[in-house]
Length: 261
Image 1: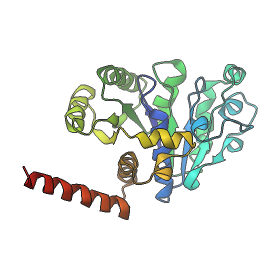
Image 2: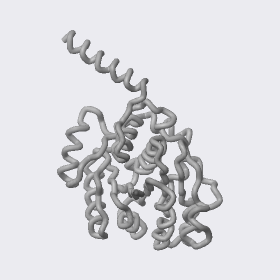
Image 3: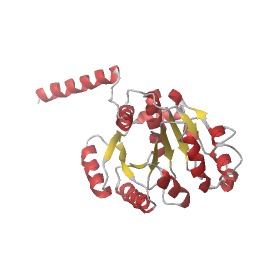
Image 4: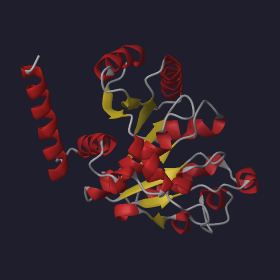
């Protein structure tokens, strides 16, 4: 059964697009036919982070009635399929967000998973992705303003008939991750389905226009993203041999350190 997830946040800058790209890549690596779509037709970034900013047909052309959605599908890493939005102001002006529903009807016949990168904030363009998804996933930073804005997005989702599955705590500090997760669950009223640590490798991978799970598969963020994807797919999570080795070294070092105190 096809599952459609919209990744949303109350404010920009939470890392929502990065999470969408990497989570989609992880699902593709698990053998799932996965599509990601940039529904932020005004401030599109998804194509930029994958080097697809110059493609001839985007979601803009589809929503303007000038092209079929199948013509706006591009090959991404690990077999991931990508539907980017355009970056031109003219394309944005011509796009009709109401046609997004028709485009999705065609896409769901082609994949197992569809992840929609929704516009940040509360806007007319952002309401449709919240309403049409099977589940909405909130991407939240460990900051009060981000959590409060995510709560507004959750309330809006419920108003338009959507359902929030849970939240992903992104850019988390290691020491207070559990404490912040508990506070988020209490404020938002939804489960935190994953925590992604602050990881400098994400910025490095972005400079190569490559998902961090491909460029640095054993980094902390990559391991966290693979764990979330495995849970979404109902599959067992498997660490890479190198990550398992690194984990053993870390645990051994902690035991050794405690023994010297």
